[in-house]
Image 1 (cartoon, rainbow, N blue to C red):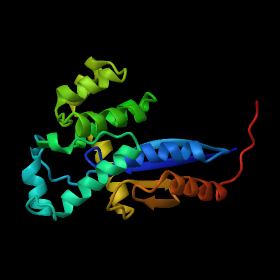
Image 2: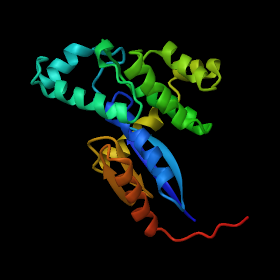
Image 3: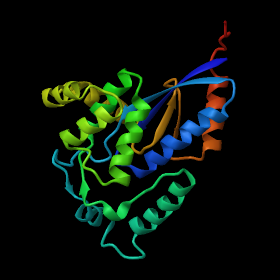
Image 4: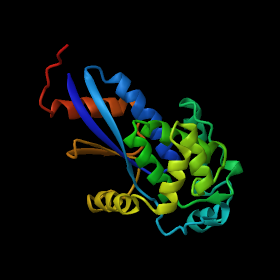
Length: 222
């Protein structure tokens, strides 16, 4: 059996990344004979957002123009809702009022990943923001989410307040930007092969298989 490390570079305020998470997980199930270690890496689509966040509608209007039926964001949002239905993702864009800074949410994912709960953290954060319109830049919300997935709330609170791992997360972000990544989700196999975008599970499975073929085969014992 071939063992493959896949790094998913994504942002927690990126709706395509929630689709991408569901699809890469399905792809892993489809790619028989390949054992995948899925690791999550941070990427802020807009690191200029202040720590307290900004008004969502004002931000989107500035980015895409006034909201109309012909607006690019309105069209994209409708497409995302339909794609979401296929993946059992309940996008609830109508309730979004706040566009948070996602940096501290990435710190939470890092800590959760260290305890084998990276995927749970990603899913919980995506759901908190896109389904329930919670402010995932707020420390109390992040502590709630950490507690919900089985982390020690008091430790999460202390880590958030202390600025723990801020430098490490920033360095990781810079590494991927220096690699030329400008959009997410991006999937990187063994730091050698990459594919970008929320591709279908079938296409991602083919990516896994093609990547595995370039890896040395490992014999499975036991």
